[in-house]
Image (cartoon, rainbow, N blue to C red):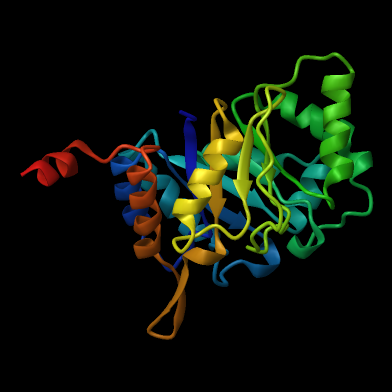
Length: 265
């Protein structure tokens, strides 16, 4: 049975109260909330304001094990690939444990010189061992992720424990893959994304579990968790619960003990 490392819900923003996320994280420790950071879109749906992130960080004192992932886009990625780590320092202070680098054009990133950024990113990964860095693995990001693989694997260096790859051929646009999910490998940790949501989560969990084999993995979703409520685009916790229930039914997550006791009654 493969191990589900994290059930990723990305796009948490000002439309949801931070305390609601804390309550959900306390009940289901496997859940990971992803916050998108892109300065030119801050405050729009899916992109939280810095004030909201501060409130979330303060609320995390109620749940020390809460999983938070920062999904960097736009200038946040460009800065990191140029060696600027000021925002990474801030993310650590806020309590984020994982940092995903969305180095694609659709996410507002200059992708023309990704290969040149490999040495810089290697240094940053080494500098922040307490943070797990995630790279999207698709045809557009190949110069970056392949450069890292060549640096570590072909260079016979120890592959860093804090580097992972997210397979997402949709490049963050929420489109399901046309091919089967790629198999996990011993070489590096892997996650899956692209068109995943409440409507297909049961089938996706079956397929990704097979693809992962005995390797731990995670899945991530974003677009499918949005709803229009009272005319507003919101991060929908009802949809998160549907996904959680499917993961519990699949045996990949555990329900809180009080819910299990209630079911038996």
